[in-house]
Image (cartoon, rainbow, N blue to C red; front, side, top):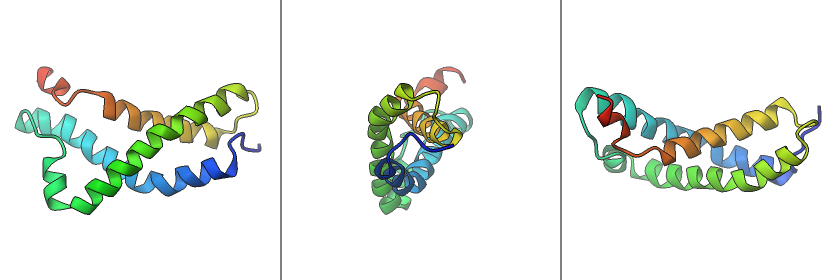
Length: 112
């Protein structure tokens, strides 16, 4: 099945995804597991001081993935019948980055 996304969008996603998803996974880890086990956290503080380059590149890549959602959703919704599974997976991972960014830092501290 052919992709409904233009090549430039797929290229932009694949260039920003490795660092963006790695950064998002680390932030999600700090927001959930570390908050449950260690109490309220300054989310991203340890990452910024241990790996500052990963923090900067990862956060920029994560924001690019969030911006990618705007045209990505438009393309996939307009042509949803012909969208491939890979297109939907790219959209799903970008939505995951958005959800992790939107969740308040102290949300999981209240569930503790």
